[in-house]
Length: 61
Image 1 (cartoon, one colour):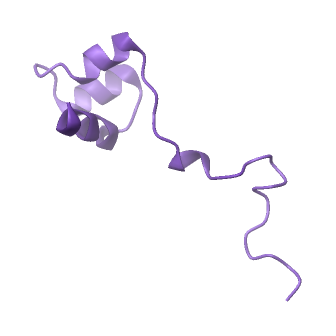
Image 2 (cartoon, helix red, strand yellow; image 1 turned 60 degrees about the vertical axis):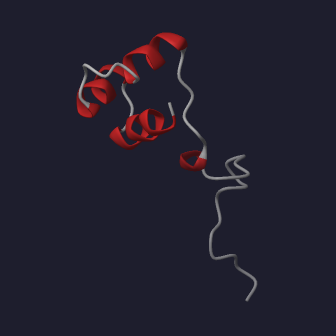
């Protein structure tokens, strides 16, 4: 079997999948994400991230 099952990552210059990276937020974005007066959905919408990132940040903060 000479063909790789998953090709394209190396061809595109990726050494890993971009969705496996941890998100990075600026201090202003973190302030919004950790604001307890905002719902998870509202905080995610304001910053432009997914809700699971907000939940994970609030859990460890």
